[in-house]
Image (cartoon, rainbow, N blue to C red; front, side, top):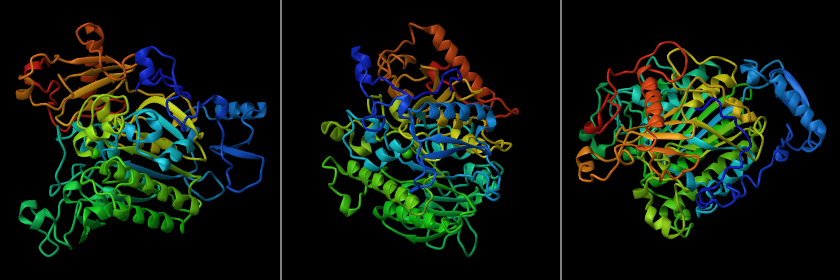
Length: 571
Ligand SMILES: [Ca+2]
């Protein structure tokens, strides 16, 4: 993260304009709507209220705000509010929901699987052809982060980073994803964002895809099951899961391990049924709405709902009523159905009166899969899942890991806002800690920086220099400010043997994303000073065992290979 970069209401240039040197056009369609500072508005604290003013609570201080954003009173009050909120305690809230203090917000993280940045229509107004009205409305209700990244370009490592606030390549998993039927990747003594929030009094639930390994055991003997020895690779109904999400901080789990055994439906620590993958998205939506209804009965206990969808990842199985709806292809239909699921969750929040004080984050675990989504077919319909970015899932280029990231919290986040701070899914853990006015627990968040100040358009104080990207084959990339170094000859997805077949590929890549967001002009050979600066920062972040200030830490393996193509090794 660039600590000197100030967050602001962004009027970011669109790529086509940048390349042609043309004047910028509005980048977010209806979401930003040509956003001006004067557009900063807040919803009434109580829906349906007739009051002409509202309260912006900061800690225990309440400041009256005029509803007219152009009034001098509004700006005076906003300035006063800003002054009062200076410092790390800006969002500190009372630890209890009792006594009339600011209530702790509910927190929801909706995580799509393989949804590209450009698959959200409002993020890609010119080259996005899949209607996503509910995501667009969600974006409009809060803040769009335009420079958010998953820790990896594939599933498992991204999820590890989100849960722990630590880069996944610090573990034994150096490339690829896990397949289940194996001990949990998150060690038992490592806090997760779920266990942390649970320790703070939250009820915690995960509905959906875990993909961080767990064991299936025979309920009678306790023996570990082996995938190749069970029919169709599915653990039988009744199988137990001793080290699943409910052993890593979640009170409640309903979902599955990964796409390959999605049919194996799990409730808490038990396989409860085998069901067709086409039923999973409707199942998760229904469970999420039921969960929100249930939590609404206990208004004194905030909740954390993590909903990692299995969609629109393959198997691409839109329900019958969604098949053909996009007029593009099944992937586009599936994206539309997923958007509808988000709409149902938003409606449930509204119905239950939970919307105002719920922080809802929507994102994706990596970019779109060109193969599974049939990108060629999408392109023929004018749809580009990575927007103007280069690459797709698995790759180091932006299309692999720059993900849609929407944050909505009507009580705190200005609607219709946009922010270009560089953040990552790893940062959600530290953000939750600052939100509660407490520190992150020991042995966690080595690579997590709170982006909470960004919600009020303030700079993000950070002790982290840049952020690390990682490809499916474990190739590294480093981003520092606008500069990006790729220690790979391509997107980081080709074996060395195949790389050798193409001698024209560069040794490494260096891009200036400010002038070249689509990573088309490799400056690695022409700007060795900048390349060396980024390489040194990357090495430092790897070898220290953490990328933020804090207690000494170490990686789980002794040597992490920096240059994955052995002929390129120089460290
Ligand atoms: Ca994925």
